[in-house]
Image (cartoon, rainbow, N blue to C red; front, side, top):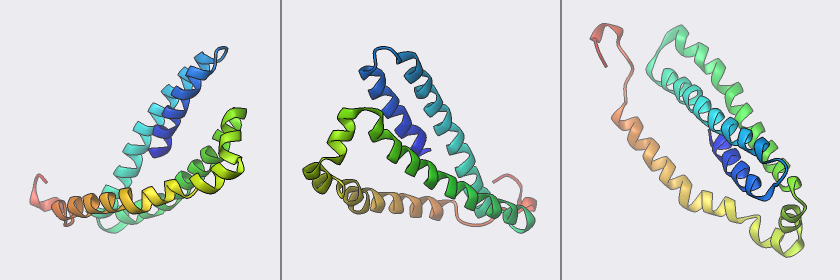
Length: 141
């Protein structure tokens, strides 16, 4: 999902910079939107079914979750490596010596110190609210 949202932002920026290929970046924006929506449904649905079911159904979705997580990591790595090489000016900014030394740890630091605690707190709250397994005999949940 995050990859789709990032791809939307990249497509929006490159559409502005590109004069000849704006239609391709429009398609990339639409593709990123579809990827984000589809990924959200698949990943959240898989996690929800693992948490809320038992037995064979839960085991089947455990088997699905690991390849999906590996695919997400591979796609994030691919986009992260591919993006700087789309434009020479961006590659120059990303790989010039002072910028590389100063800015490469910034996303990690922001993610680790600001975003990760917020995500963990929200996830913990949601798990607390929706704790417990589904009992098919209990009626509507």
